[in-house]
Length: 549
Image 1 (cartoon, rainbow, N blue to C red):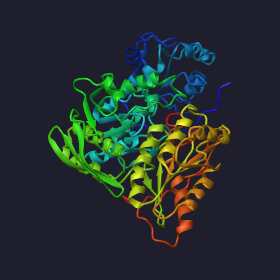
Image 2: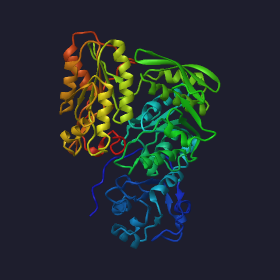
Image 3: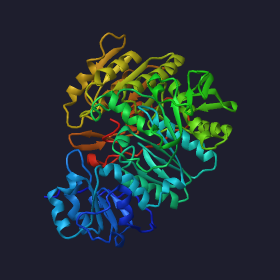
Image 4: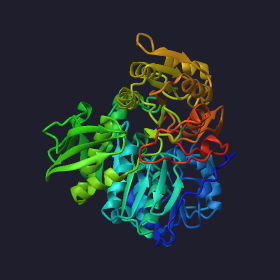
């Protein structure tokens, strides 16, 4: 019996020129569709989707292999909703749900890898929209989101009408929608590009996850530039090992990008370097195409000199930490690669006010600085705490870290996360992140297993709100509280439900409750108000449920 379908409806362009099924069949090497009429040229396709509940009349429905079910299960609903043909693999063609469709003469394109075929098909259906845009793709274990916002700011400074596709949100000009995952499925992604083209967008910066590269989500995309932030072991609940994770990331640099930009400070990336590769170094490596010099921390940001092919340029970034100097350099390299003047690019990056949930300082009264960050990977935790350690030292205070690990995810990194938290802070409070279906106490024990042998005091407090309250209660003048793991997220997933929970709101409320009558420490770049989220089902989460955590 067919399963229940979700009701999410991604954006589609208003105008699509019909494409013959024969053209698409030839494109993917399925010249003789099973079950359908011989004259496939008579079948005209005006849309494509991989989700049965999103089918519109004239669509090609892509029945893909899923982690638990096959999309062929939903072919009857797709055809009933107006799909004119089906794209699937051998397993889908053999699925019992497809038999009635074949018997009724519905055209079915059978290919070896339907996911791999979906990108080129969607690109063709929507008229190759990415070719009409300047598309910049960013991959890496950490730093994709921050760099994407910096790149977008530089594009705007250069006069582009911009789009952004990533973990926090999807923005096309003035239109903003929730992001369900870091990188949309190929059918949705090319539709977004088509909407962007219709809306007058000229340049799009997007995050490209390892999931997206391994599952073919960016197939058919014409990238002007591909940028790589850094590499560290992660997502081993999806990838069998680090080698597979690296290989997936490396696919962005298989020739699909006109310009490739790599971090020269990360030795793991050096095998991807080619003679034409653009490189950058926050550590000032003179061999890099772009390098930083004279880095000076100033408040919650940094000034530095960016030295590129055309000479030095004054630069700045309104985020702390040497890793954000690296992100700014990557942004400059990407921007200049698409023709933005270096000084204009640097001014745009410097003007970016910050990134939601990335070293975001909360607006609250009192002598304690509260910062929220999305760091939930070992390297990201280390980088965030190193950046905030400098701030705590300048203020003459301690660094208090509140940290948890996600349930139903890579268990091997939990003790490494604990070690990073204990090594980088003076007080580490281990608490719950998104427990999902796991016992929260067992998840915390996994994190605590790595905290021995460090100077930091380590405390375990179940319940994230209670842990935040404890951190604020223990804080003294000059201290910095780093609330890590959830960043921009507005919910906490517990036993199949996502309950309203925003770290920024919770930390600000706790600080206000304790220091409400005192003068606030002004956030750098201005504060942002965050409305609480309504309770939702895990399938409706804004955060990248399967990819980031």
